Image 1 (cartoon, one colour):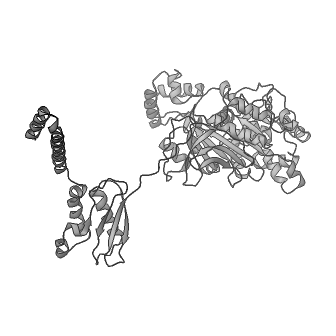
Image 2 (spheres, helix red, strand yellow):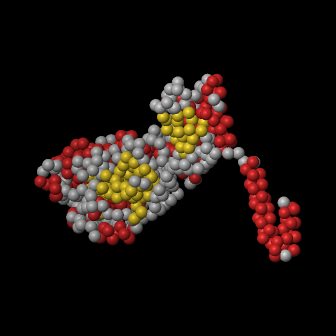
Image 3 (cartoon, helix red, strand yellow):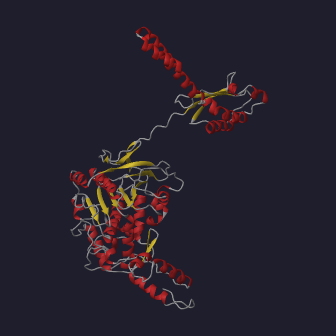
Length: 566
């Protein structure tokens, strides 16, 4: 090569006559250099057949149980490997012995051998019927990319009353069907995850189809954008919420009694939306235990259970919002399972997933960090879908509600439903001792079903309420209590309660939470336990007076002998 370069230089120097010869010499030299370099590179790089063939051959001999004579035919007879196994259309063939049966177990072993010795994922196609049985492996196509859900889904009205648009899944728009055996549904989410926004959807959807809506919330600012809209009542105190639930239950019983009669068609669908269900339960239990001095289970839980069981036939439906669907919130598993469709917005821990869908339902990965992203499924189903919940702004909700059909005047005025008759009241009272809890009853002085409006009773209710008030009748297990002229305020704020930890954090108990737990353990060994309190979501709450009395007792213990009880 060096000589070629020198000769080319001399030829160019000697004159034009030798220039063509010089060009030829240079071209031959360059081509020679390229061929040598390419050969050197190729000599140092093995093909895929050379690289992976021996390893695959070693395990194929064992899987196919090749005899010595068959092994003597060599690797190239049994393995037909291409030079390149990385292409999308790459394929190779393994010949099979005539005596190899190819059972499921044997095929699994061969597939495992291929996957463990060759790069990539492969699919097998067997042909054992011909004279030369073989299996052809082709590369698996790459999985289809998961379609991304949009980060914002605009809520769309639905023309079907029983089909409420909730958002979008990978299958398309997702609706909740309320024309099922379990028409009630719920949404679970933490603070700030968008639970209350989702609960606005059934309010607007129901009103668009003529339903009358009662909203229960213990948050002062919740549903402010819909408060005062025709056909929508918002209840924000414990007693007001209990009265609304009592009226809702009696309305359901009366509507159910009218099924099959001409009056049935005149009864509109009713929806009760309960936000922060645990807060409602806590507030109602506090009033029951410390206000009415009630014993045992509050009757409100039985009303709620009965509405979930019988509401479908009377077209009375419930939508629940809660931090979790734990059994403690709903009192028992049966009541919780009557909530048919359950959704989660925001993150879901393993315990939260288990109480929502069941421990045997596999988790569905989803981007919970996206605002409004969650999952949805039906009780008892293994099919849980990722969903982007639809968004409806407060201004859009109010605008939609302003265009809804007119609501009957009795609803906005706070009058009980006109189909609630004396017979319905009598039956409800016999079943669940409910009349003293209805607006105007013995326990509901000052309670209003309509914001800033007095309670207006129907003719049938007036006599019943007067009778209940004059007799100061209480429910079974509760002491008779009157509330003359009592203001309609939140019982929870009027009578605060504290968990053991909260009592330590607020200095009601003069020790740390850890020290209080140690003192409690010692007191229990001495026979002294905390008072009964009010249990909500597994946490027990007590009044400051109860905690102070308990603390005085346990700190006075000098001996475990003959200890008085609380």
